[in-house]
Length: 187
Ligand code: AP5
Image (tube, rainbow, N blue to C red; front, side, top):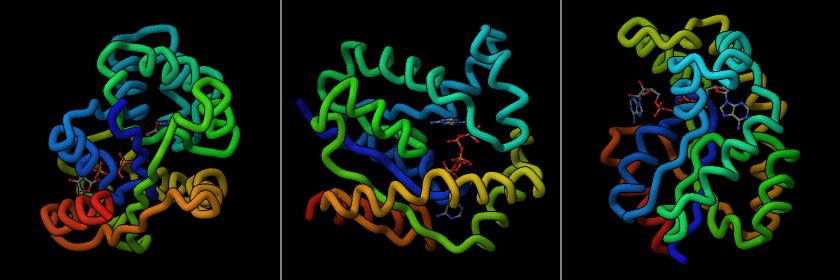
């Protein structure tokens, strides 16, 4: 079994950007619940139809739906050699569900990308104007940040208390952030 990692951090911190590169570098799949849900929306599946309006409002999709999707993905063959989760678990109920399914071995290290709110909003507003992701509208971005503080931020203390957390400054160039992550992982 290879590395079992979680990339944690607020919207716009660079989780997807860095997890994709890090996953390739280590040779483990990058599993992003946001990407999986957006693919379900694009494909018009039942899950996508249920998730679309919730995502466009910047709220969390019901945990049982996301947990079922993640468990099924983690049971695929390529995840046997490890994985890098991005976007899940997103609150304590999801952390408990992951542990109920796979035990404490589900995660061995959590990488927390940190950046101030004004930088996060600036990045996401820019992406909204360039790529048109439907939740990259300023009012929705601000709601995503509130949801992060209320639902996801408590996980930082949870994983810190288990000595699993590595904090990484998410400001700087993408290369700078990447090499900080590599250093924390090696340490
Ligand atoms: P999700 O896709 O996980 O969105 P998010 O957490 O809001 O994060 P983002 O993808 O916006 O940001 P990121 O931190 O990945 O940064 P990125 O690399 O993209 O979730 C979307 C929605 O799905 C949720 O709101 C929810 O509705 C639902 N969902 C997902 N998981 C769920 C779950 N477990 N339970 C319930 N619901 C769930 O970068 C952002 C931008 O910044 C990019 O344009 C990038 O190019 C740029 N950038 C990155 N790094 C840098 C840098 N160093 N300098 C300058 N710009 C940078």
